[in-house]
Every structure is written in C-alpha cells, then in structure tokens.
Amino acid sequence: MAGIRALLAAAMCLVSAGAFAQQAYPAKPVRFVVAFAPGGPADLVARLIAQKIGDQWGQQVIVENRGGAGGAVAAQAVARAPADGYTVLVTTSSLAVTPALNPNAGYDAEKDFIPVTLIASSPNLFVASTQSGIKTLREAIDRAKSGKLNYGTAGAGTTPHLSAEYLFRVLGKVDVQHVPYKGAGPAMQAVVAGETELASVAISAGVPFVKGGRAVGLAVTSNKRVPALPDVPTVAESGFGGFEDYTWVGLFVPAGTPPEIVARLNAEAQAALKSPEVREKLAGAGFEPVGDGPREFAPYLRTELGKWAKVVKETGAKAE
Image (tube, rainbow, N blue to C red):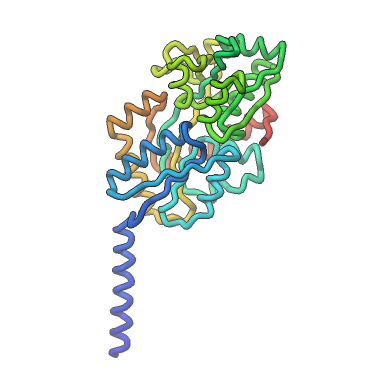
C-alpha cells in the first residue's frame, strides 16, 4: 500500500508539473524565424509584433532572419523544430507559392504547420531605378519590347515574383529577366544601385525608397491607390484592368504544437495588433492589419495554394 501511495503521489506531482509547465509558457525566449532578409515585409512585421509580444509576456522574443529559396529555408527549419511553441515561423504568401514552383520545396504547407494568425496584408509595388529613366509602368513595358530588362524580387516563389511574371509575360507580352534576392530589402538595394532596372516587392519594402526619391514608384497592385504612396497609380490605372495582388504576412508553428499554445500565441498577436503604435507603423508601411485565427487562416491558406498554382501554370514561372 505504501508503494501504491508513493506511485500515486509521484503521478500527481507529474500532472501538477505538466500543468505548471503549460501555465508557465513561455518559460524561456521564443524564436521568431523570419523567412527573408532584413528590410522586407516579413522582417518589418516580425519585429513589430515580436517587440510587442515580448513586452506583454515579460519574456524575450528573438527575431532570427533565415532567408533563401523564396522562404523555403526558414519553412523547412521550422517544420523540423520541436512543436513546443518556442519556434515560430514568420513568413509571407510565399509559403503558398513555393510548392507550386518547386514540388520538392521540402515542406507541406498544410500538413507541416499550424497557421496561428494572418497578421497583415499589403499590395505589391513595381519600382524603377532612377538611373533607368523609366517613369511609368507603360514605359517599362515599352522598354522591354525593345530590349531585355531585369527586375529584382525577394526571391522565386514570392507573390511579387509571380505578380511581375503575370503582368509582364501574360498581360504585357514582354520578356523580362527575373533576378531573385534573399529578401525585399536586398532587392530594393539592388534597384537603387542600378543593378536591376526594376523591382517588384511588397509595398512596405519600397515606401521609404520612393518617398526618399531613391526609386521611382511605377504602380501598386491594389484595386485603389494606397495612402502611403498616394501619387503612385494602380496597375489598373496604368492600363491593365482587373489586376490585383497582395502579399500577406502570417505566423505559423510546427504541426503538433499544443492547442493551448497556439491559442496563446494568437491571443498575444491579436493584442499586439490592437496597439495604436503598431497599427500606425503598419499603415505607414502600406499594411492593413488582419489578425484572424487558425479557423479562418487555414482555409484561406488552402485557397491561396490553389490560386498560385494556377498562376504558376499560366505564367510558366520556374524556381531559380
């Protein structure tokens, strides 16, 4: 009997310890693994949300940039990480695009992750190098008809990449050379330096360069002009009606992460998005806050996978 009582006492201690561990989350720093280099939309959003959540928790949230392969490098790393809530993927709509470009992307967007929340969404932006002399989207397409142009993006498999492929090749019927970088930040630096004549990036990456006169804003991919760049026309205004594309940024955790941890992360992200400071900074970069939950995000991700698979087929885009 004494032995049984000892076993029961030990079991109760284990149950109590487990409950305490769940209540204590996070008991150590949490890593936000960003799928692109510093300076792009995923990085901007990750740092805003990480700082706010860290303040709310009283626990450090570390931002780690792991760019490469259109976001696949970071996605693969997080998919293999322990499902304990301490490794969180911050990525863009590239998570839904890359599998269509590369069947061997190294992850399954639906099976390997739990979508925590879609944080924010922004249109994409076409810009030109000031050295190119190009002032409008029409001028860019006319230039491409007489000679090949290069355009940079955050990488193959990003929505700005496919936005550009669809616009130039399908609608504009011109040949352009894609130059993939490890993030929108490096792509913008390249167009500013004149390494590429054009760039297609999420608007948040291009706003400071266009406002500062270091790049020329050609067109935004939203259905109306954005307050952050009111003088830049839409693609539709530039002569291509019905064209509309967006880049979103979301949080994901490895499949198998306990529901209570997913719920906690979602609640903290939602709280961060209610901060006037965060909303102001997102709006200034051309982002619209979303902040949904897993029940809404999961079917949206499924829709995005189908949408971009169709675009890849129509454009003939390839992984690079």
